[in-house]
Image (cartoon, rainbow, N blue to C red; front, side, top):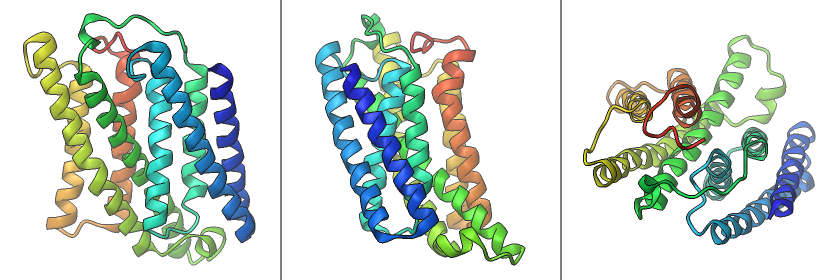
Length: 271
């Protein structure tokens, strides 16, 4: 199983190199190669998650290695599904490195399979954890779109029509990408909080404990809710939306990692 993960990581690295090479050269053959490699990595990654499930006997979402690996897998398939529906030039050059970085983090995390504590021995585990990580994956795609928007806008603002101006889609296309990613990620984030509350009721007898992870999940939700509210009521789009997508993803990452390692709470058993 270890070698399957290493092989999967190697394919992700190759896909990232191809995506960056296409960004530099704009050769169609390299773009097609990169897309094929990413799809191959996604398939290998799917096989790895299945093996993890068979080995552990439960959904592999209970450790840092498993959670980050699953998020990388979800980002891969989320990107591929968006890529075939929305044509966003050179999106892969920004998404693939982030996926590979997540896989490196997973590789550096412990892969030890531990016995589940009583609180995790529930049918809510695969429901809540998978939805929450799927939400993070689409919020990560919005983050990538936000970074692309700011890079392109900076060149246009300073009238330096160079690397990004020639290779990135229009600002309007990137703003639409941001909206589409949030249109998927935010409902999933909402559903993740709801299922987490239902699970908390079953496990601890109360829907909400103001546990650090619960609190930061709510903070993250309010950030994205404010962004969507401003988009649809005040026309808050483009640069402000891109910045908020980046800030919101930062809060989502802190909820995923920072809370677990820096703050004590009922979720502290997940390392």
